[in-house]
Length: 145
Image (cartoon, rainbow, N blue to C red):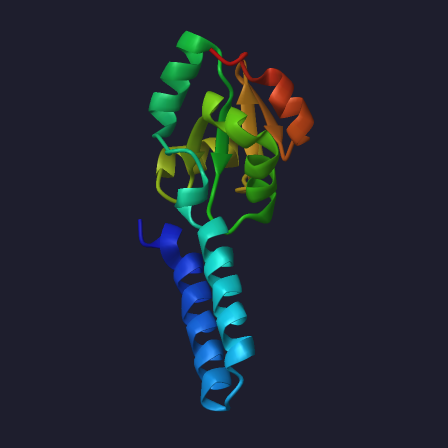
C-alpha cells in the first residue's frame, strides 16, 4: 500500500518545498500555481486516478465469467496513465490489477513479458498484450450497460 502512494507524496512534498522557497523570497504569484501543479501531478499519479484495483485471482475469475479485459498497471507509470485517460469512463468496464499491491499480478506480468514487469499489460481472452494502443483496448471493452 505504501509503495502505491510514494510518487504522489513525493510530488506534494516537492511542491510544498518549492512553493515555500518561492513564498519566502516574495514570489507568491508563482508559489501558488507551482504548488497546485504539483498537487495535480500527485493526483494523476495516485491510485485515485484509476478504477478500484482487485487481486489478480479475482480479476481472472471475473474475466472468465464476463469476458472483460484485465489491465495490469502500477502507479507512476505514464503509459498506464495514458491508457486510463484515453479509456475515459470506459476504464470501469475492465478489471484493473495494481501490480505493486498484488504479488500474483506482478508474477502474471513477468510471465507474460519474459521476466519484465512491463505495464500496462492488458489480457484479453487469456492473451497478454503489452502497452497496447488505447483505441484497440477500447474496442475490446464490452458495450456500456
